Structures are given as C-alpha cells and as structure tokens.
Image: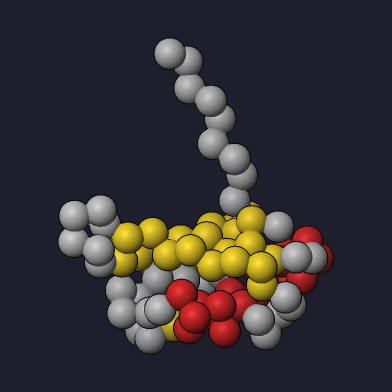
Length: 85
C-alpha cells in the first residue's frame, strides 16, 4: 500500500519517518521528496507498506498526529491520472 505523507518536519530523515510507520507494520520503502536545486526536504513524501490492513491502520492513527511540532497529514496515495496531451 502506498501512503502519501505531508507536513513532514523539514529536518526529519527518511529513516526517522520509517521508524514512525514501522509501529504499524512492515515498511517496504520511504521517500521524502527533495527540492532539485537545494536538496532540502519539500515537506512531503511517500511510504510503502507491505500489508494493506497495516497501512490503513497507520493512515488512521497517524493522520493528524504531531511529529516534531507539526501535524502530519496522512492518506492513501493513488497513482496520478494520465493527463491529456
């Protein structure tokens, strides 16, 4: 299950974000999106969890949870719809 996470503290590492989600199940990957020019966190990213049920629990428990003074926004991620060209 792919999960979208926003309002991530800018100083948080991918490993720290992974540790937050591993409380709810096995995390396959974590990617915090970074600015191409500065390399700094843009404050959002994606977490992929192996089990959908565990992923849904993580979404439910972590959406609105405070992490380092910021309120996380957590929801299931869906593939981008292809845009008309």
